[in-house]
Structures are given as structure tokens and as C-alpha cells.
Amino acid sequence: MKEFISVKDLGDLKAGLAAAKYVKENPFADQALGRNRTMLIVFFNNSLRTRLSTQKAALNLGMNVMVLDVNQGAWKLETELGVVMDGDKSEHLREAIPVMCSYCDIIGVRSFAALTDRDYDYAETVLGQFIRYGGKPVISLESATVHPCQAFADLITIEEYKTKARPKVVLSWAPHPRALPQAVPNSFAEWMNAADVDFVITHPEGYELDPRFAGNARVEYDQMKALEGADFVYAKNWSCPGVTRPQDYGKVLNKDMGWTIDAAHMAVTDNAYFMHCLPVRRNMIVSDEVIDSERSIVIPEAANRVVSVQTVIKKMLQSL
Ligand code: AN0
Ligand code: CP
Image 1: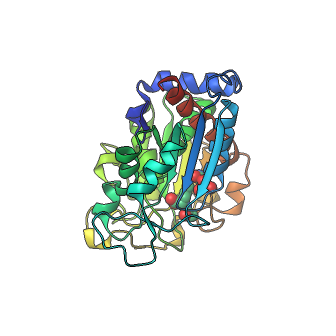
Image 2 (image 1 turned 60 degrees about the horizontal axis):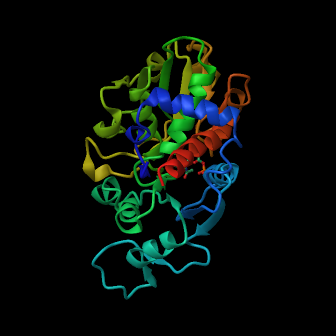
């Protein structure tokens, strides 16, 4: 495996889930695989789970790990090609990437959408440079449009908790005070479309996800109707993807607190489990009552981030 961006990079999804189950049950079985191999993880943005779970996964595989916070102590990096570098950025990604990659065997990159230029973000301009100029396997640790390590962990969690062969999974938009990327819902939709689930997306008008990720998923604008009979409720805020109105890309179009997942929302489900990728704003995205309930599985979901990324790193090590 040379890159991990899409569900397709995993190959056969059932085999990928079986590989993840093995990793979860035998976390230290492949210590020899990573011996004298180095994992570098680079952060352009904040992180708690991704930072720790990726380090933990690489350590479980016997690797050495290095972490770089680009905005703390490194030179400010220019990411645009063809610009006159007369501003505050001292170094270009064009040099920084091959240098960083000369120090490691596998690289993971977190680089969020800037949410100003849709084409720039949806071309995965920053991650694409790591793939083109680095020459090492690249893992998206949430890039402009995708968060595959999260979606893989989410699917692993659904597989563990489901009690029906084909559970109903509802991705629900929920309110948030600031503009957030679409990476998490994009990847979640992409992975749910590939999985054996009954998948429904619900959001206010204007929040339609890019068809590359939403595919043929059912969209139901009436949130309560969407939630009826759900087995899993996956809440997430995202800013306007600019699909129907490109000029609204990255904007907050709606702050309707009626969309906050509370007990009344959960009451119409089939005793659904509540999921969220975290970090979550309580009483904006979800009420205290729901996230603190027995049906909330946000902590085991986060714990599975080690499993998903360890499965991916292992596959990459095997193909070095
Ligand atoms: C980020 C997002 O919504 O993409 C990271 C989630 C994993 N969330 C925030 O910035 C709050
Ligand atoms: N879910 C997730 O990626 O969390 P962090 O932003 O804390 O890494």
C-alpha cells in the first residue's frame, strides 16, 4: 500500500476488516515488522486522537516514531506552487517534503481544508505534494477532503456493535459555532457506501456533500424521519460543501439548535448507538444526556483509531 486516502486503498473491505480484527486481538504480533523503520507524523493542525493513536500504533509495530508540529518550531511552510516567497514563509513544501521523507519510511500528514478555495481543497493540493515529491508511503491523518483513519475506525466500531446483519446508519449534520471541514462526513459517507449497511444522510438544505463521497446514499432533509429506526446515529458538523452554491463554500449557513442530537432525537431510533469522531462540543452537537448515556460509544470508537491506523501501517510495512 503506497497511500491511504480512500476506502479503495484498503483493497477488499471484508479482508481489511478481518485484518483489523487480527490487529486488535494481537496488537504486538508484528513487532519485528517495524524494527529499524521510522514513522514520521506531520501536523499542520491540532490533534489529540490522531497524534496519540498513530504513535501508539507505530510503537505497537516496533517502529521508531517522530512527530513534527509544523506551526511550532519548524519553518513556516509555503504550500502554493509558483509564488514569490516574499512573505512570512521561509521554506517551500517542495524542499521540505523530500527532506522529511529522507528521514522516514512512512509519513502521515494532517492538513485541514483552508475552506476558502473549493478547487484548491478538493484537489488535495497539500497531500498531493507529499505523494508526488516524497517517494514514501503517505497516510492522510485528515487532509483537505478526507479522514480515512477515522472512517475505518468508525466502520470497525459499527461491525463490533451491530446486532443486525444490515444495520441502519444515519449520518446527521449538527450545529457548531465555527466553520469545520467536510473531511469526516466525506470519508464516513464513502466508507458507509462501501459497507453492508442501510445508510441515510440528513442535513439542512445547502449542506449536500460532494457526490464523489455521497455517491447514491439516500438523503433525507427531515432529520426526525431520517432517524426513525436507526441502529447507529453518527453526528457531525460540517461547513457548506459548495455543491449547490459554490459561492457558499466553507460557510456556516445554519446554526439551528433543533438539529442537536438529544433524547427526543434518540427516542425515534431503534435504541441506536451514538457515535462522533471527537472532539465534540457538548450541547451543540449532542446533549449531555445522550453522550453520557449507555448507548454512547464515542470512547470505544476513539480507541479503535489505534486499530485502524495500525492495520494501515502494517500493510504499508509489508509492502516496503
Ligand atoms: C475537525 C473537523 O471537523 O474536521 C477535526 C475532527 C476530527 N474538528 C474541529 O476542528 C473541531
Ligand atoms: N477524531 C480525530 O481525528 O481527533 P483529533 O483531531 O483529536 O486527532
